[in-house]
Image (tube, rainbow, N blue to C red; front, side):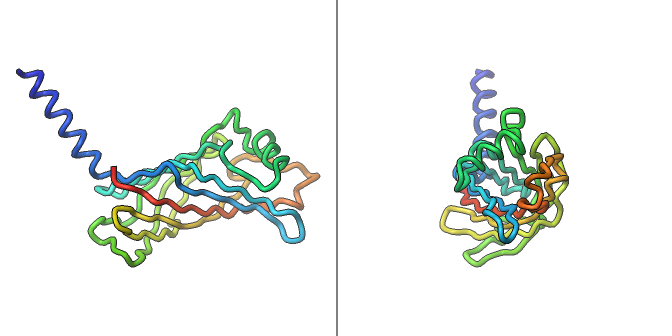
Length: 182
């Protein structure tokens, strides 16, 4: 009987905790490192996993680096082999906290907030503070979107001299997530 009660308490605790989570496996993450007058250097990943704990505003997003798609297949190959080294560093991860997050304050109108956290890419973790985000409640979904910039050199990525003037040192990152209650 004790085992049944223990199992029941474990399951109800797990279910209660999971009700505070919103999740997606189809989030969008894109970046651009283009320089005017040269070919566009941009990619998009539409299979990013993201989770939000609505109890405390903790947020995390995980992207497989090889899932970034470029317009040019050769550029995609160079990105994976020479810059991101995606066989060695297959994942990009962001973990952080949305400042002042309260589920009860979300509505159909946009709420502007900021998120502080850390981004891990190419085996390097860097703090990212005060990233502006827009949150919106839409039916049973929470929409989160925003953008920020990072420096290539912050993640120990070396750009060869031969293409240095064709790639921006500053990379613009844009994200959109439609999270559903789990």
